[in-house]
Amino acid sequence: MNETAAPVKNKANVFDWDRAIFPFAKLDSLSGELPVSAGERERMLSVYNRAIDQIHTDNTDVAMIALEKLSARWPHFTEASTLYGLLLAKMRRFAEAEKQFEKVLLASPDSDQAPTVNMWRKVAREERIREQARDSSKRRKEQKLLPVRASLASSGILQRAADEDGTGRVQMASRREQEEALRTGGDYTDGPLRPRTGTAKTIQGLTIAVIIASILFLIFYFAIRPVIVENENQRARVEWLEKALKERADENKPIGEILDAYDKAFGEADAR
View (cartoon, one colour):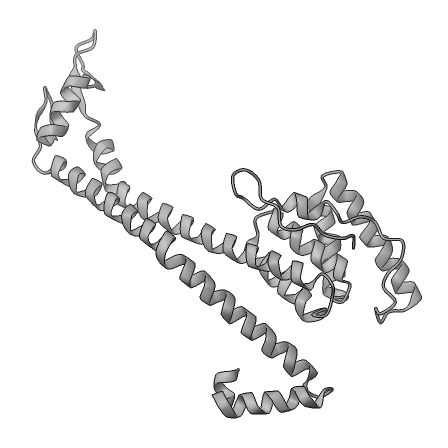
């Protein structure tokens, strides 16, 4: 994998995943550390390079299928696994991208690219949390506006007007009549506007509820959310470190001693 640049955000302060993908290019050979046969090396290299061609010709979906298979069968193929995670993030599949980056870190924790991959994992996590917050806020607003829309749709702020045949047709009330209806809470039956009790109060109450919900969302987004994100990041770091240490405990005695001391200090159940 070519040297990867530092994180880049555009003018809208949105992470530019295309800039992160751009340095990935075709490979002439694979790392000698990969435990695969010569035939498998040739096949892996061919599939990876074809995926690079597909990315450059905007056939991202085809490239992702190939990279997903490479990543699943040979997780230590860092270039393929990392590039697959970046494409997932580019497609705004942030939850899947976050998990993919975690797999890359577990498979190759000592890689030179590990700090950069970990940074991408954090960005994907933050994007996922932001999207979840936006979706939740949008659903709440739509649910609160449903009664208003239903009320307006049922009344239509309509009036009766005779057509040429005298059978009558429905047309929209004038702007003045609409404003008067909203002020008094209009109730509409056949004929000119007549008062409808409670509609204006309902609309006013719903408007206040939407404003309060918006204020609460801003408080959550700017005050509470950063704490949640930081706690999630800390938890993820601890979990990743535990997994990495446990995988090496049998091979490295000092690590095993550290884990034993950790279990005694915090309890085996809590440690896991």
